[in-house]
Image 1 (tube, protein in one colour):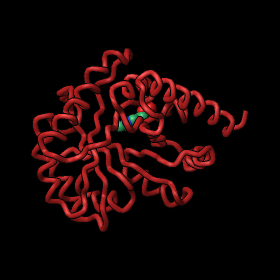
Image 2 (spheres, rainbow, N blue to C red):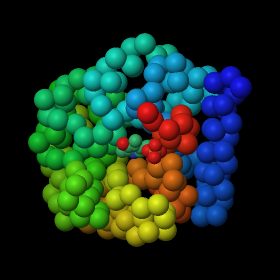
Image 3 (cartoon, rainbow, N blue to C red):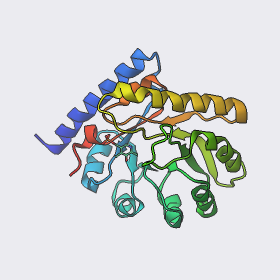
Image 4 (cartoon, helix red, strand yellow):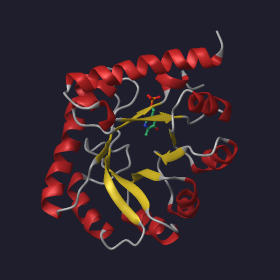
Length: 227
Ligand SMILES: *Cc1c(COP(=O)(O)O)cnc(C)c1O
């Protein structure tokens, strides 16, 4: 089987899962976007995915993206989903269309300084209070949004979370729900639209969609296991 055929088959399965989850949640399919997480995969894999119609690609390391983005087709939209150090903010602002993983005010200020045009960002929230994870504490997000109001280039489009891994997606539901409820509350309190919720990966995309995800970040189930 060719690599393209194999990719098409995996993509069809993922698309069907997304469609079913949208139907079950009574949401329109176009409210959920598929971010193809191409980290560790070569440009050839991105090209196959692009030929199959995917446009949004997620990377977790600036250096890897720096090598990959210029050799891939133009017209793809690159999103950063991994922790970013402020000293790489300039490069990140040049490479990426959206940063899902803004996890500190320091980073937001650095991105704002170096971006040359409007830069959509999501604030990463550590909803589970997981000591091993980056992200704002839920109670810090309001102040971060107020600080973002002063930004010239950074525009907060919503929130992102990476919950602690559980093999049982139902165990993750509470974290996804907490992110949505936090978003709903902040929209009210700060009076700022926060339409995007980046949550859900290969094994738990259904639960994330049921809880309101607008960006599912899928690596393994599209590209196969990472080495
Ligand atoms: C790697 C990664 C993903 C994709 O995970 P899979 O389980 O391979 O789908 C999603 N989000 C983030 C932040 C990641 O680092």
